[in-house]
Image (cartoon, rainbow, N blue to C red; front, top):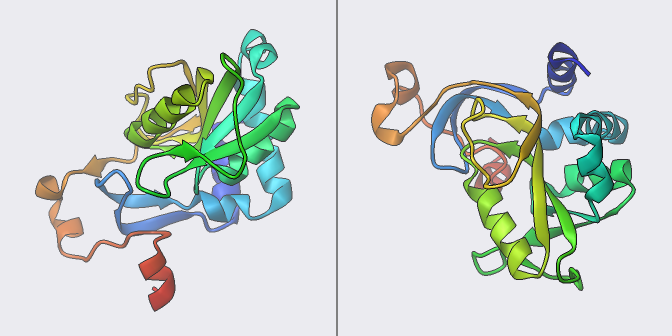
Length: 198
């Protein structure tokens, strides 16, 4: 799947948004990729996961024993990657602020894991998820994501394979350009936004 085809999937599902967004990393952006929208169509999610799995080196694909993704954003693409790779998929979540396996999920000591995200911006949550997977006994052999927003700068500490790399600029609070500073930031996907209907 070419980059233009991937972006067409995002545009077709109204998942590529423009405005002023406060990202989960704490940085601001004029663009936001709402992966939940692009993944809500099961056929589209399957196409994207199949394309992402195909981008992984063959020898890596053959080593993967489990897929683990961070909740919430990584759950759907993680599940679809498990299907594409023919392995079980599970997720880590933060019930008390720190990622952990729950719901009866477990890993065998040394089990080889692919950590899968929807979007990587700084890599912070990915590294936190990797740490939780390794604390649970897994060995993370690579990371994968639908979108690398870091323009290749994110370091997960393991080989990283995104489906597409984008370079939408992001800004710290104190370096906002005037056009962003003039409008309030929206936290896309947040519960508060959903409750207010914004």
